[in-house]
Image (cartoon, rainbow, N blue to C red; front, side, top):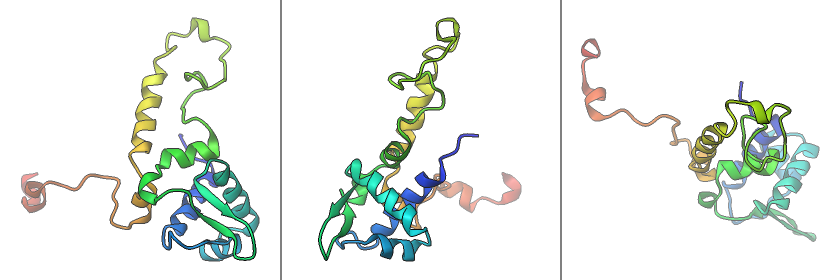
Length: 154
């Protein structure tokens, strides 16, 4: 099963929470309280996201974190990459830095790049703003004929 780790899921939750008030400076304790994610985990996530400039750190008495860019400009792919590195189903992806022991003999060599690119493209098409809105759907809406048709005719 292809699965994101829990920290990546929490990173999306934290950033989505920050979209509620995008111009405000958010503190780690405030985000932890609002999301139910433990404070040490929130602090770890914010540091990782700040390293990639997805959030900006503000020091001082009124310090905290803000979104690095508007939610419409941040893709889910960027968040995943910030937390987990390159998006790939296998270790033999272009530029992954991992090398397979049987790479020179593998009949699939290079073929996974197309699959990985399709997944990256799909995740890049979903923005943080999409994740923050309850109106966003994974599936495309049905066309009018399907909605108005008699279910016995389908």
